[in-house]
Image 1: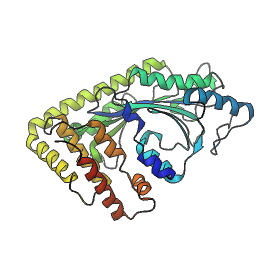
Image 2: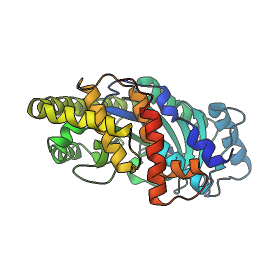
Image 3: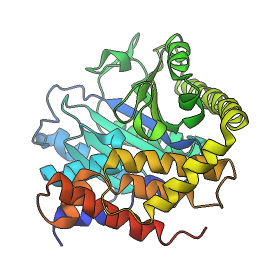
Image 4: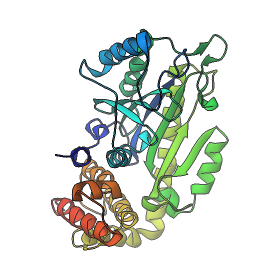
Length: 341
């Protein structure tokens, strides 16, 4: 089996572990960024020099297993990975330990550890990312300043080197036109709020990315607690918005949810934006008991396994837009047809 198809058929590892609030938080996690003390070790080609190379490889093996290697992905396989793990976008070289833990080397040549799970980030997921970075740090010297903390090319991550992200499903906030207000409120706290897919203030799929980079004054565990509070705040805001939406437009919500599920089961041509919108209504309908329970994990899998690169990888070659949409519809019918109402 060729590499792109093999990668495309693998389910996202973060689906195997689910934290709290999975009906609102699709995934969340922490990224730990570290630069090596001695200059350009992690080149774009991905190989280091001499003793540092051997020390780093050995240290990575303690985290990712003795057979783990940093290997550059083909362009199509890389695109498939970025659809399956959107938070890895920009990573040139990738090493995976499974279950949502990765190490990657980005264009700015920093070593970056990613620890994610479905739902809200847990203490275990956070510690997993920190431990991975600390284990490698015992064998190689990271760039560090006694006053500033860890040094990184991204000035926003100087200090702790931490970046927290959450992909959230916020149909209540979006359909009650409160997304701009949420973004303005979060922005005052140094938290970024962006649409996952195109369209603002109504991004397709009602999917919103929350990004939090703690300043140098916070300890790692304080930063983790702050991020958990941010997630909880947004979850509560979404609950209130869904309640308001249901009280003012219950029939519309039920209708859109039911029609989206029915259409998904018979569609012959389906664009990705359209699919994400249908899944949004279905997820909302399930959460508000307008539809019979469906597996959140299965809905997430459909969303992240049906992007353009996945379709091309499964087809084994280039596709026209119509061919891609036909293939996506066939895939969606097969998945949705197995769901029990």
